[in-house]
Length: 520
Image 1 (spheres, rainbow, N blue to C red):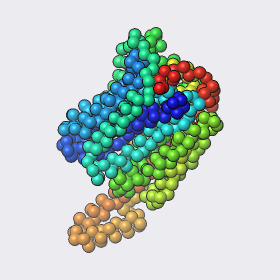
Image 2: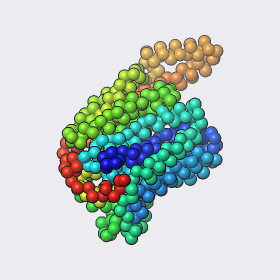
Image 3: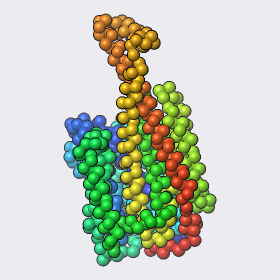
Image 4: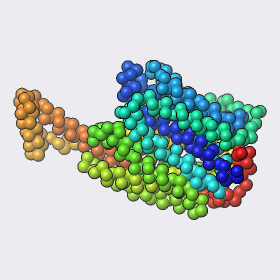
């Protein structure tokens, strides 16, 4: 078979693996209450099931470049797939919160390596002229997985067994391993390639400290000693990491790539799109479940049109971008995202669900056009295929950091603005105002009719008024947060206007020596 006919099964294997790894960052959230009940633990304890996955994934990503070179990219991907699959099995068998956290660490170690190595493999395996369609298909795993995660999880928890959210990975993991084994050959192996141990220690300490700080910041208090210490640790270790990488002959992460203007600008654009994207994905469930009283399954169905639209548009954009160029698609996609984003930021308790679904579908079209195409900008800017694994490491680290900081920042903004709006509303809504007095009297009579005493009915009416004030304050805070997410995309749009793209590499006019060694 020719190379062009033969790379798709390998791409499918990579997409399967990456889809599972990304899916497991969000699919577990809906099952948290059920796991708390089964394991008999508190909210604080169960959150480590989610946090341990994020921290471990971030810590192992810098290892991906070294592992691929030292042991071979095919072998490394197979081992990471195996780790993830075994971790999924252990999650399904977990008997306590501690065993679940340990299993999630195993799962995340495989998932973090698999995502980064998989992205490198696509760049090396697929001929440059076919890279657009392949990255479009790969984009389904990166974007659609977190969007459909709550829907799948809600279905499994409601109609099956919550453990199925983990064990469903096992058959797909086995299929992916068989496809890799059959259709991909080993790349170049450098057995004597030295391991940058200090670089790994400093990078792991910096990333874990930073992500732990942004994850726990709202809970512990951003000015608490614990959070400030973590942020200082991240700053010091991050500085030592950069110094180490610039001074060693064989760096764990090639930070010199950041000197490439188009690489850095592309990285910035993609990171901001991720912030705007995941911020909305995390904020809308708050609106649906906490404010409208919908179930997790209903929330998943609300978000589904966006996932479907992006899943359809992403591969089409990848195919057409190879001919037209990446930049027109990114700019047009961001315009779609901005138009729908500013309209979504105006939602309230009276917004029709179908209207919101149409806006999300429009947003999904925009994300399908700009998310994966923006991911290609920094990778193609590298030019030299030998440096692609290093570029993949940096892009995955930046996305992980941007997503975590973006979500934490928007959730923190939502929390603080809720309090501010509630205080302001409490000052405006007083019992001396005629409309308020009328409402309180009507509610008081309603509670009296239900059998409460006059004093109890008055207290219940006041309590109901307080709940309404908080609810409307939360809606205003949500609108503020969604508006900030939209403005982040405005900045991405402006940066994209000055960024460049490597059209020569996109159209396959440069030699790609590494891919022939990997295809059968």
